[in-house]
Length: 379
Image (cartoon, rainbow, N blue to C red; front, side, top):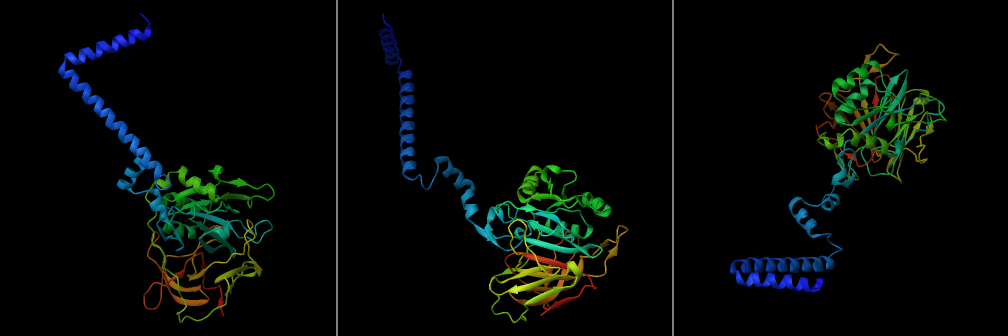
């Protein structure tokens, strides 16, 4: 008997057995009907999904969306970014920021610095001998990669701002007191002297002014440390608004902060761009990455006390908790009031004479910490 004849004989025997046994007949009939229904459903699903492929990806995607909402919906939801008030997709509006110590010494090879034009927030503080240093804060992980540097050491005063922003703190070593405080405070720490995989040395510059990082490297560090999977930052946002045309605040076109010589700071208001072009030591300040002029939307001048001298190279720890006088400049206007910071973990806030929060323009802000001996002029 041929193979084909054997197959037919087997099938005939199988059918005869089903006919003789009514129970098996019902069972097998049910199985065949069920398979038929499943095949019909699969056919219609593919036909219908094919017609709507531009709107939906799959049947399972529809179910997932109904139960949990879609990533596209969250991406499409635009809200103010907590750090600078700029409107951004919800998924990107409150990530763990990267706070980076950037040198400002008036030495060859230091200025112009890299990355400052792409920061959402920058603090400037005197660190020692009248020399100022920046802490640039980056919270936009989707912007183009920016080289950042020169990266320098940690200082005590900045730890107050790192704490309130709950950011990842990138630096290269630090003062003795700062290095003791960082682990005690439980800060998210990225020390370039220990985690060199997130930094690089630029051969054409002299050490220690040649250490650089980038936004890509620092956000990778945040992911590698699993900080991005922890509870999202809960710091309070500042007050942001869109229209200041009806404000009765005085008009100001120039701000001068007399840190001294090469560290003097000047901001000149640009009516055309509604921002403040920054000058350092009489020279307009640009970003080495893109030759872009540093031009923040908001200037905040926090007046602080004399500070606490530290036993290292004339360093001073400026007290930025408590309260003090504040001057805020934006939209070509001057606003005055009080800055208040209840404790290390609290966000610094700014209030007018009536106790209302002083609103800022959406966009980059520079915060200047100014002790009593430093003159400030606005005109």
